[in-house]
Length: 57
Image (tube, rainbow, N blue to C red; front, side):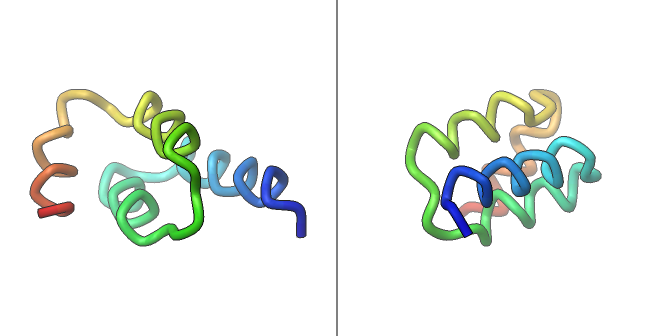
């Protein structure tokens, strides 16, 4: 499968996921570029950013 198509699927799952699921997707998905991670981060609710930071520590 094409990497960009795969990212579009990840992005769609991320968009529709709960906060905890967003964190799981963000912290366990491998092979994304920095720009792709930034794109996911832009869709993450800012009020839960501290929860994401803790999960990445």
